Structures are given as structure tokens and as C-alpha cells.
Amino acid sequence: MRRYGKNPDEDDIPTRPNRKGNRPRTNIRPKHEDASEGMILTVDRGRLTCLVEDRVVMAMKARELGRKAAVVGDRVAIVGDLSGTKDTLARIVRIEPRTSVLRRTADDDDPYERVVVANADQLAIVTALADPEPRPRLIDRCLVAAYDGGLEPLLVLTKSDLAPPDKLLELYGDLDIPFVVTTREDFADGQAVDRIREQLNGKITAFVGHSGVGKTTLVNALVSRDRQRSTGHVNAVTGRGRHTTTSARAIPLPDSAGWVVDTPGVRSFGLHHVDPSRVIKAFPDLEPGTEGCPRACSHDEPDCALDQWVADGHADPARLYSLRRLLATRERHEGD
Image (cartoon, rainbow, N blue to C red; front, side, top):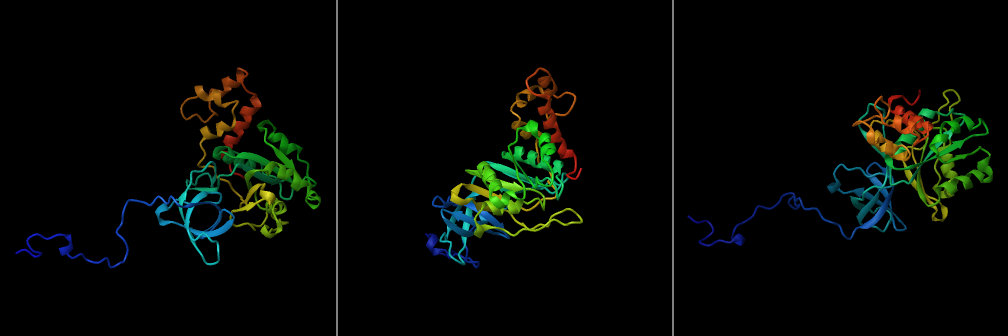
């Protein structure tokens, strides 16, 4: 017995309604060709503050992105309500390819890497010369992370009125890293700000440093008053600062001169994710010498071809020493 007649068509066959009221799943994802471009300024518990043209827009990440994280500095495609008015929410539908990535792990045994900031041009490593004492091993680790992620390093040494910078600068002299030395009084007359701004002009610069070195104070001196962040103090007993910056934030410099990204103070900088073959790219005078290295060479073993490369006069021995010292920080703890 035919239930729907002799020649039924699809209109004769009833369909069961979708009780959830949603559309069936599909592997076809929308292209969002009409999406606007934006830049992530802050990330706070699933809500992302973005700059779209000249408007600050609150957004959330689209489900179709899966577990892919969006971080400060990311260039994104964004749809929905882009007015930036209160209680509106847009949607990030695509994260554009990154030009650079600053990453760290909690420690050298932690396989989970955390992206601190994306698309920065420069990493400003802020270190006090005293109160608290400088930690060269932590500086080394920040340098390795910068070289590995494609950022140019900049040393910013604060509180030179308490201790001279010569010894620390000598340690990094062979790396040809630009640096700025400041005193506490320099901020009163603006001299320090002017010298640092020269290094930041036209760039996106991420600021890192352990707590108490004056990182956020420095950032506040660079940006307009309405964008400043709270600061803390150094504990007189432990010599450590208090974490006052709890999340990364991108802040524009006055007159559209660039961007600074203030990051939380760090007490460790794990390098589990670092590949020595990427760090060597920051040493163009040594990189050609690695062609004769064995596979997966650590550049600090008996068969490393860099020793012969330097012996033949192609590079300064001090440069090879600096490279190996930086790579060795992956095996040492920051407090050493």
C-alpha cells in the first residue's frame, strides 16, 4: 500500500520539525567578506576590546574559531554592531596571520606556551639598575624570546642614579642592542620620555620587565593622562615589586606616533617553546656558518660548525659566546 500516492514528490512527504529551532550543521563556513578590520587592545574573560577605525568596540570570539586564542595586538576581521555604543557586542570571525609573536611558558618544563602579544615590532626590556637588583638571566631569556618571535629588542635601564649602567651594558655590548638609560629625575623634566619616544616612533612596542622596575611608570609617562594605569611599589624586605598590571593592554602614543603594549610584570620567563634554529636568525654574521652543523645542532656541542666559522675569521668570537650564553638560558633558571 502506497502511503503517499502513486507518484509522490517531496512536498507530499512531511518532515519532522527541528525542535531546537536552529539550522542543521554544515562544514561550510561563511567567508565574511564584508567584515571590518580591527586591532585587539585588551582581553578580559572572553570579552575583547577592539579598535575599529577610530571607534572602540567590544567583541566576542566567534564559535567557528574554535579554541584559537586571540591576543592583544592581533589584527582581526569583525562583524556585527561596530558602533561602539554602550551594551553593544560585535563578533570576531577571523584572526589574520601574525607578523611576530612574543611567547613564554610558565617554566622550562611547561609545554603549554602563552602568547603575550602579537604583531609587535619591538620588545622593550625594562630593567632597574638597583631597587630591585637587575637580573641578567631574565634579560637573556627575554632577548631569546624576542629573537625567536621576530621582535627587535630594546634595553631600557631605569634608576641609574642608584647604580651605574656600565657593567650591565658591557654584558650586552656584543649584541648591538639599542638602549636607553634613565634616572628617576629624568621623568620630572621629560628628558627620559623624549629619549625613549625616539626609539618607539612609528612602531608597536611591547614592554616587559619584572615587578618594581618602573615599567608601568614609564608607560604612563609616554601616554596621555587619561590612558594611564595604576602603579605599585617595591617591597623593602623582599626587593620585589607588587603586580599592579594584571593584563596586557595596547595604548596609543600621542600624535599617532606608535603604540605601546604594557604587559604584566614577570617573575619567570620559560623558554620551552624556543627553537635554536630561529634564534640564530638574529645573528646574521653567524647564521651562514650553520650550514655545516649536524642535524638539530644545539650550537653548543663538539661538532658545531660555528667554531670553525669563527676560527676562519667570518665572525667575532664574542658574538658566538653571546649566542651560546643566550641559548644556555634555556637550561638555567631565571634566578641563577
